[in-house]
Length: 175
Image (cartoon, rainbow, N blue to C red; front, side):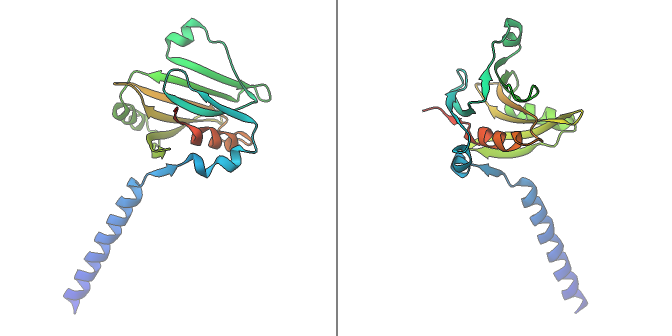
């Protein structure tokens, strides 16, 4: 009886460890179709995201800003701002690092990184907190050896949390 109990306990521990591992490796799936109803409440439209082959729903309150050559040279090719809140900024940039190296670098910096899928595209999500202002970042693989990073400042403050969920969920291939 003791041997049977020991075997049962070992089996339970193994199953528990497997379940914990499975929970750690699950990928969150984000689909535009799950957020379209919320987008209908926000005036805006889809627009191409630079020359990336992607499009994103851009609320009308976010206006494209002119970028300096220095900013463009650094890889940032899109900055959207709203007049309502000076710190509410959405930007996109290309970083010369492959997807896996970028993820490894984030983890080495101590960042919590979530593997997600946005409209069928593998993506990393992480947050940067500077003095209580959270920037939510979404990273997609781009052309060979590069990633595309979308940054959403004030990601922890309403109404931007809700607006950014719509914007991030809308990132998808332009057709």
